[in-house]
Length: 114
Length: 115
View 1: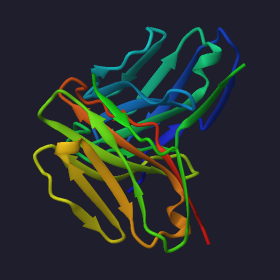
View 2: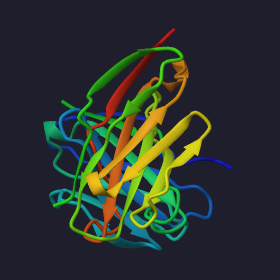
View 3: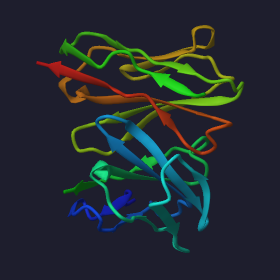
View 4: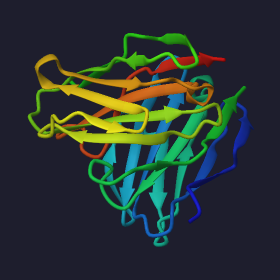
């Protein structure tokens, strides 16, 4: 069974640009969550999608947005990039709520903003 | 507010030593879930265990064991006879009613096991 895949794995962008990251969950999984990992703030929850609907959202500015498609694949977008957005962005999938079902993480997308 | 504290930033041990990673959590909810994840150098988080607040039984899985104590709000993780492959960053996480489907992670403990 293929794991969670994230593309691209590495990305370098300039301040002010926008970026789109992609996540393909494990087949059959309908919940996709996104996390930002930085040395200073650690792992922080961005949002969770279930059946194409945003079910939960973390405390991030509106520049961070996401969506989920009918095949459960998810994308997250960051507009007007800031230096502080440099981070490892992790996607995770589970059958349903991560509270009740094992959550599988992808390898992440390393975003560097210069 | 919910919070997870992993006071040990880094731990170094020699192979075959036992090591305990501490996790203390804060929540006002009576129903909550606790997790441990492992993050090897490759970067992806690996699920180790999930425990709900009504199940205080300790659990053992091979060389891994977990001690859940509601009285001290702790969910500690012990690796017995550590191995070099155990070297990783270990995260404790909490999810309660207020968090919804989000996991609130501690800052992590970096475990280095040398041969």
